[in-house]
Amino acid sequence: MVVMRDQVVKALAELEVTGNEDGLIPAFGVLVNQLPTSFWNTFSERIMAEAKQNNKQQEVEDALINCAYECGYHTGWGIINSEEFKSVVSPMVTDGAKDVLRGAYAVFTAWGWAKSGIVQIKEGERMVIRATDYYEQDSGGEGHRAYMIRGVSSAFFELAYSDPYPDGMGKYNCNQTMGIETGDDFGEFVVQAK
Image (cartoon, rainbow, N blue to C red; front, side):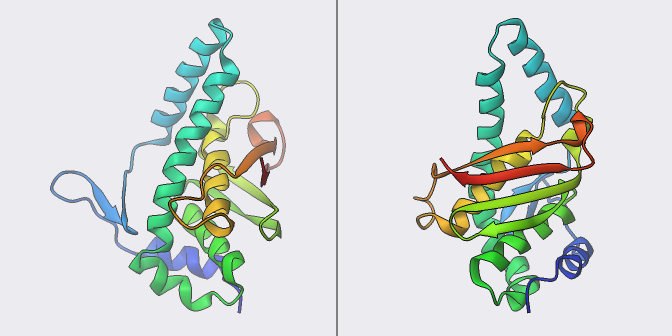
């Protein structure tokens, strides 16, 4: 049995995730937030607008991707080792790291970050992700804008195929090859070794 994405998404979406007295949401072994997507899109677009005026677009884009990458690496580790993940996803894991990755993208979808999944994987070498809906598609900026998916996809792949946590960082990179924000029907993301 492989990880059944829709079954995982449904089960995770039904879990009650509430904030504590400090307004933080401890879930999946990490702290999560429920800020509106417009907050994150406005934040990144303001930074990119300033970068354009100073000819630093690539530098700022790389920094935004790295923020998602750092978060995705450490948060991803917490997610795949959480009781919630172990109770919902782990019973379906029969294909090792591939199934863990499928489960991680089901969490990604259940949390509303992106309706996404793996369409191709060559263990330890390459992975292709497609997303039919992701919050950065509505950023309003020019060009590919899915910084979060790029960073998190690199991180997830490293958690699956690189050195054991926390020593597996910096081995893979994710490039966005298609994007809804640029007129394509879906976003496509390719992870491979640096």
